[in-house]
Image (cartoon, rainbow, N blue to C red; front, side, top):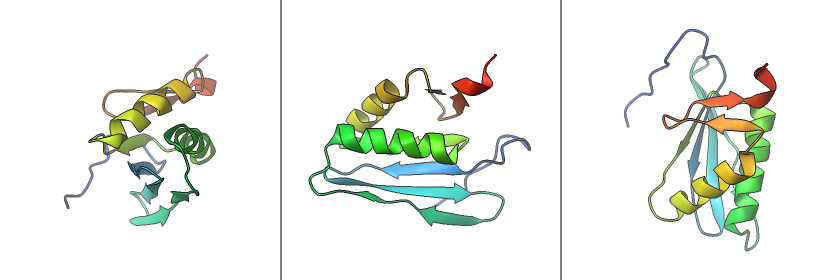
Length: 106
């Protein structure tokens, strides 16, 4: 596994990695400065993709990562589409995964 590069010195928030699954998604917050990760696995009994997306958006707003990395192969693409839909008006997700929080835009 290759190391992720930090784009700028101002990028001090963690990076959120999502590995999508049908019944649950693995979610890890990685702090590039502290060289550590925190497992935020979302598991639910028959949790739907939409419920997972809502939980992930809540985590994004709570932990405020600077980037979102999602494995968009297979079910991950559907999860990503719903995350974009659920996050509309709250956070903007760019093509490279950078997150812009709408409360920071004047």
